[in-house]
Amino acid sequence: MAEHVFYGFLSANLFDGWDGDEVDAIDVRKSTVRFSRCMERELATAFPGAEIETDWQDGAGGSVPRPLLPKVDGWNDHEDMYIVDDIAARVYQDFESWVVYEDSGD
View: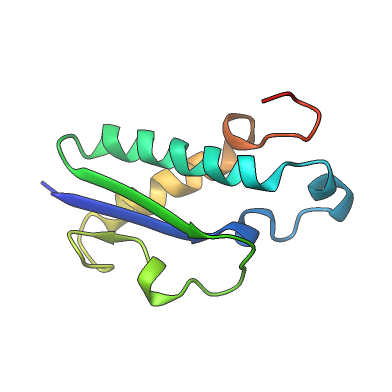
């Protein structure tokens, strides 16, 4: 089983393709932090006992730079990467769990 799981992302990619008015109503910073926490929680469940780490680059979008590429035990082609990718897709689609609107008080 994996000993270390790392998930990195670019914060602007979370909202890529979203309507501008919709993004204007979102607290991007708080949403980014919440997305990261959701990822940590789900990865810890999928990889019990592994060290879980997330990181992101604020305000950046596009291709994820090599240091932020998701990895399992230091490898981005590890056999368990499909689990990480699956979790990321599931967490991303669950907008209610991580999107924070400006007027929400969260």
